[in-house]
Image (cartoon, rainbow, N blue to C red; front, side, top):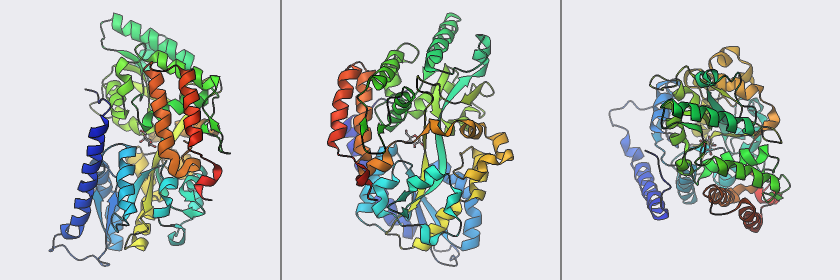
Length: 445
Ligand code: GLC
């Protein structure tokens, strides 16, 4: 039922396969429009890469219709596969070759600084004021003074918890600290199993060796006061007792309150288990709320979301999410920028939040009462202390982020599987990250 970590060869093969598939589709795009279709006013078709099938369909059914009607610009989607790293590989190989399509890319929040040289500066094209976006996100999208992408939606790490089970076991509040979470998870797990509910687990999260583990682990590390991997001045922060303690805690969960197979869990594995009613708590992204509340979810109406528990140094939750960017090699930069500005506009973001639960990236929408009413995840985000929301060090590491994150999650994975002690693993990691020579200058501004 669960994905296991893919062997390297298979991943390589998959990468090649995806790349060829992307090329084939990209080459076919101009032919794909049926000849009997009415010619759009500007005779421009934009290709957008990075959306899943469902997300592309939703967008086509809603916001895009108006855009197409008003501008005459056609929009086609190239479906995305794989996780963030797989997608980055395909995007980089396409952009490195200066292909004119895709015109627009949906990219993870960690990639603007990696891809910036290939991306169009959107600033000269914008009609609206970019300061409407959350300042942290706009800063992340601005590289060397150029706005290379615009924030499309925000994804925030949160704790999902079962309201029915908390009540059943006499808890009035979700856990405020990791210690409390451990106790509650164990207690509920024991009780449920004793009542014949097996398999049942206390806590699920993302423990496979990939970007998702970087997010989970940095939340543990930061909440223990172990730093943020790279400090703003470029100092590497991993080899310290706080981080070792944080990772020791998580390693203890494997096989106790979390399934032994948690070390191969990515997002969908944890979500499936929680949705099927077999876990008390889950670390997931805000983007999981709607599907957990949808018909078909066993826990519909029986769960809620809140901030992740605090460690000795307070709470920490990763801000993820996706951005829209225009390729510098697009033959239609103006139209592509127009599409990106439209899709990230307040109007579209508001309806995507209300209809589909995507957290907005526009500050003002966090005081829209109608929106807050139906998007509880937005309320969690809004009411949490700003200091507790943390970004991965992708802006400072820039093109080295991918290597940094891989070193980091592989190390954490070795600790989780008991292959290394936290101390030995973190001392090696400190050296490996120092060897990457990340400094404030590597960002290029
Ligand atoms: C989510 C986040 C993204 C993050 C990924 C990790 O998709 O939005 O920022 O990189 O999870 O698995």
